[in-house]
Amino acid sequence: MNIPDTTTGDRSPWVIFLIFLRLGLTSFGGPIAHLGYFRDEFVTRRRWLTELSYADLVALCQFLPGPASSQVGIALGLSRSGYAGALAAWSGFTLPSAIALILFALGISSYGDVMPSGVLHGLKVVAVAVVAQAVWGMARNLCPDAPRITIMSAATCFVLLVPSAWGQIGVIVMAAIFGLLFFKPQNEAVHDTLPIAIRRRVGVFWLMLFFALLMGLPLLSVIFPNQTLSMVDAFYRAGSLVFGGGHVVLPLLQAEVVPSGWVSNDAFLAGYGAAQAVPGPLFTFSAFLGASMDEAPSGWLGGLICLLAIFTPSFLLIMGALPFWERLRGNTQMRAALCGVNAAVVGLLLAALYKPVWISAVNAPQDFGLALIALVALMFWKLPPWLVVVGSGVVGGFLATFL
Image (cartoon, rainbow, N blue to C red; front, side, top):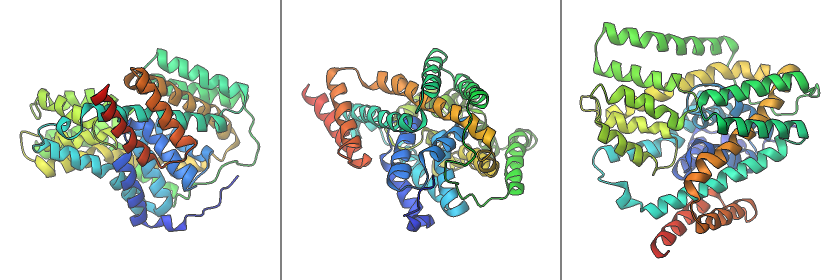
């Protein structure tokens, strides 16, 4: 079922930038929570795409290496306004946290002085409500029968028992095979099409460029020893080879920048702590590391170089994969596989709701109460997510002070 587009004004790259800038300033809680914010903004409010199309897009980004939530944002911007829209969406969502982390690297002594621990805890609690809302909304639409509820439950249990990026990929692959074998969707597509104005030949070019850089940058850094080239190589590889995104990239980055002497271990850990205090994608931690380099380029230039290097693979993969994805998901067999994959995606979200979101946030009765109020505010009072985020931070600070 196609949903009519009632937001034609949202096709301006500048408008897209402003929409994602607001999300970049208010989207606390990590990549899973970001997907919840995106769903509320672009499926429920703006109706840019249907629930099924959004789940398909999330499934694609789960298949690809790199930060899934940022890739979903890039794809949404690309579908609205081409390459300019993709850049606008990424810039708006990424720059707030990147700028904050570069400023921290340049001399902000402690984020604790700016944002007390109680406020931070309140922001972690509101992530429980955001993810719970996403799980509930997606489950109602994507798991309407016993087989798909079974897939969702099995995916949740498996991911909790095998907590790794490969476990998540394995669940998606198994769900796709199960859907291909046992589901028989109607011949008529049940989702709206993302208007991706990229030809397949151009998509092949972007994919070839992705692999050329992945294989060529290490050779170039050996042939032409250069600090800037070595930084680009290290951060490009991190963005290309890490499945799961977010926290999964941290060990690889530490192995690249600490033993080489680029950044001290103390600075690395301080930056990691600061990254938890800002909204937006955790991959912007790369901006902190680039700004903290002991050798030039560092500061603003180093932060920008590392930020662009780690996100470039996401752009190339999304621009290369989407032209083929649009055709494949219209195929009956592909849609049968996606029936299973979509149910598994809900299972992954449900597993993330428990770990790490729930267990890291709900430690006391007042935490549960705050999460419940935030969920009611989102689902039934229909308050804007940014207001619920700010309110939860304020309440979290109040509870930490007086309880």
